Length: 83
Image (cartoon, rainbow, N blue to C red; front, top):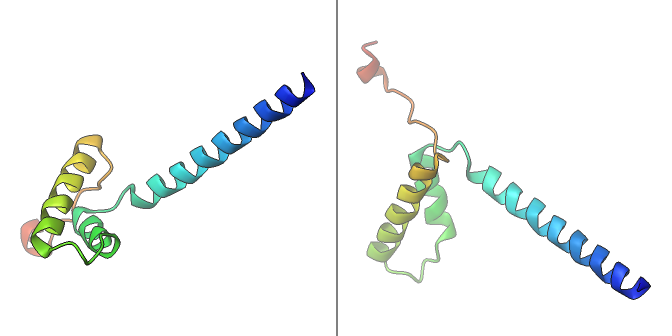
């Protein structure tokens, strides 16, 4: 019984660590603009992948991030703001 309890506690600790690591990785991407997210994706995606495939992958990832509300709005340019 004691061995089962220790195993259960260890399993819960491992799950908590995984959840914390996942949350910190998600927070790293949350609030980026689309331009910032694309440049970060370009750094992360392997350069062995052809450019056109990387572009397609980036487009799909950015679309999912946009639907989930992870991306921040692009700041308005001075010309668009009328200044």
